[in-house]
Amino acid sequence: MQPRDLSATSPYVPGRGIEEVARDLGLDPNELIKLSSNENPHGSSPKAVDAVTTRATEGLHVYPKAAHTDLTKKLAEKWEKAPEQIWVSPGADGAIDYLSRAMLDPGESVLVPSPGFSYYSMSARHHHGDVSEYELSKADEFNQTADLVLDAYDGDRIVHLTSPHNPTGTEWAREEITTLLDAVDDQTLVVVDEAYGEYSEQPSSIGLVDDFENVAVLRTFSKAYGLAGLRIGYGVVPEPWADAYGRVNTPFAANELACRAALAALDDDDHVDHSVETARWAREYLSENLEAPTFESAGNFVLADVGDASRVAERSQEEGVIIRDCSSFGLPGCVRISCGTHEETKTAVETINRILAEVAPK
Ligand SMILES: Cc1ncc(COP(=O)(O)O)c(C=O)c1O
Image (cartoon, rainbow, N blue to C red):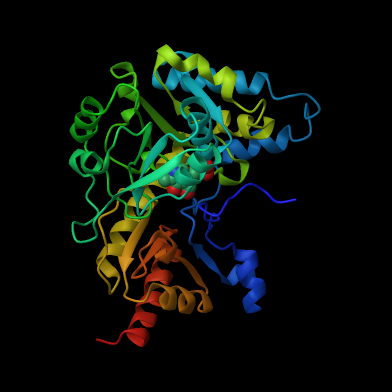
């Protein structure tokens, strides 16, 4: 017995967890700072924690129907859309899968950014699609434009855009997205991934789903709301084909506690504002104080050009600061450092600068 040929699919490489690293290095997990997975250094929204802990064991024997409906309705109100247009999912990853399921016939192609978030191509391949790439150029500071995508575009069925982009932090300008939407085929779905949208100062592309039938926008509770462990996110899609959700979603995949937590988190503006404020401070602090070139970021992380990324990430981890080696993104010279609290970020900068002086003395 063998699975089907999965050789074209690379395994997903997550940032390493604190417990795992602590065990390997024989350290106390409390001594480690994890800045490798773009998580929220302030934890979850306290209102969300309260919502799941006070009613933690209540109603867990029934399928998550009411909480899912309530969350869908609340998100629809927030974005001024019809409830059908909100595709609640287990993380934004789940929404990527739902869009792949809804759109792809076997052999159709999906155009993804390189470097970029690896789950776009994984999902395409899971759904028997082919993958091609458009290249963001380091020499051009990973700038994202319609022309760049159109140069690689060949009538693909799905085109993935990320704004702010992981791992570089760059953003799409609204005019560039509309230029792209006007230029591609009517049957090409452009997916704008706004997993880091709260950290950006630009308006969401969700407004575009009223004007274009071939755009969908992804959002998540994993980052600014601090609910990565619960796996909850959503897509927002145009009204004319929104009913496909009923045919493609995995029933009840967004679990009861996740839906309850997300509902409460939506009422916790203070937590989101505080999280965004810290990230904006930290990305500025990182770019001003790291002894390595950095790229301007609109997310809760900063990409830094350190030379030998594997070595720097490994040494940094030994010193208690876990950062992301971007070799697996095809950027062997770069590390991605998530925005921590003020204290964590300052310690990270001090540690990395010490390592840079040791690894690549000037
Ligand atoms: C660009 C991008 N999209 C989507 C996701 C997945 O988010 P979620 O945790 O909601 O599945 C991530 C996670 O890091 C990401 O970086």
